[in-house]
Image (tube, rainbow, N blue to C red):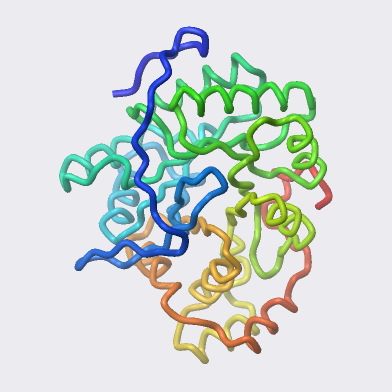
Length: 311
């Protein structure tokens, strides 16, 4: 179980053994789909596809979805304090690890700091609360969910994440919903460069300038809402390409995103869709079809309330 909340001053430093995976390599199992892993700028590896659990309830439905994802071959679960389902995710993960005998380090778990908890001490306490809810000793990735308007508080939160990483409470640290100005401010003041920036990215919201800035600084893009929350599954261009490859529109959208080197976070509570989403990465779109999809790239946000920057 997770430790009770400890302050940075009293937490003993300890080392976490990290299983290293080469960039773009695949782990194999005879009974599950293969999932690619990507090397982050801190040397840790992140599975390229995650089960997202945004708006999933904190109960059996989410436990079943997480279990179905792990059974299918997912090794990355993306939650957040704001989602209020860390307990359900933790129960499912711990039960699955015990049932299968899989080492804890083989499952990558992410959570996020909510806006109300910015500031050095508050951030550290929020992380400890998340660990308690998951019932885990450490997280693989912890993100600032969105940038505080107060730059000083934002930087204090980041300093707390740096401390937590040194103490072994998290392996990798990053941000979410950060625009270019937020990234540049952090790079000017941080000791540790964020490993990821989790933002909305899909063919209808490509955010090219922000993606270029992150790539230039070794910050991996995690694409949330890669299916545009289902709003574009009937798009005729995507539909025609899906028919050409005998795939679903969702599989085309996910494949396009992963081919750009992004981590993708499709959300579903349905076992069949969880499986179908995982089967999106075993084919290659032609350069012509990629160009056609790229041409769809208007800045069409489906999660506008989370954005605090114009980019």
